[in-house]
Image (cartoon, rainbow, N blue to C red; front, side, top):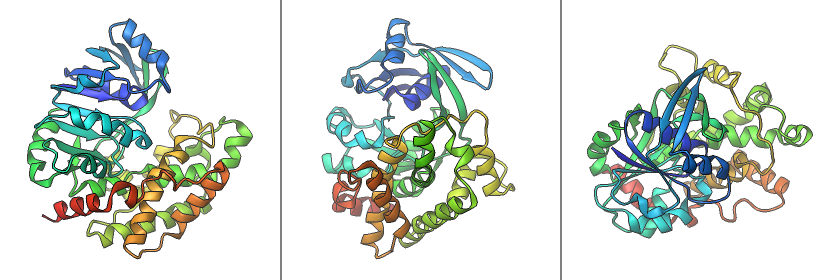
Length: 357
């Protein structure tokens, strides 16, 4: 298949390399100059050469096309968006007019960006899919090298419109990624693990971030019993919203277990702490302005809080984390956040109605 990957950071490079190794024709498109220019320039100068280092086993691939031209999405079977969610709307404004009937726009992760698409294109003739989280976890370790930390064994995604879900499934399954299909992109958005684990972990570790200049690992240190209580309280708010919308109220740890393990008999919390304790986990976050806060609070928790308000479901923990993060940063994270007003209430109504059939 022909795949365009938008975003040349950790996630985009991992998937561009992985799909190249699977035999697909991949075009990697860098959409900004903000980060990872050294790696992108290496790829440009070396014919897309990239090494995937996965638990000591190295695989060399060549990404077919390296570009900064957004119009390279034309003629692709799948257009995969891998930029930080705070930049989705700006990118979609440029991208949506270039998409054609039959293409699949896969937003990874989605955080309900389908609503932005509907605000830009009332009746898109292309298919939209949203993932819960990145399929491959890891980091660009040096120009032309990606260190794989973890691969999901199952990747839940939602599809819009539901009437095209079967077609989307046939095309997306050809990628080779182990996808599982949800009822709606709403489920994918609310089961984004970063909305729970990044926000609680990063806000609660602000003293460690600043005391060590990021020379620590959040996953190894921060999830003490008391912090875990905060995580579960926030997760309870998410589950009450899922239930009110008619979706399964799956706890955070159970959703993680589903993505991370094929052993359905294992304890979900134990699986999370095994995942957290992996020696390959990267250090950090290294700054209070990390995306763990600036992205997942403004794009995730603001969305959760706004949905709660619309359903008369209190979200005191989400609201408290938003307030604490905003105070620590010195500016309000609700401004520019992913509220229902920003997403468009009518767009959300369309998505919910589509899922109901």
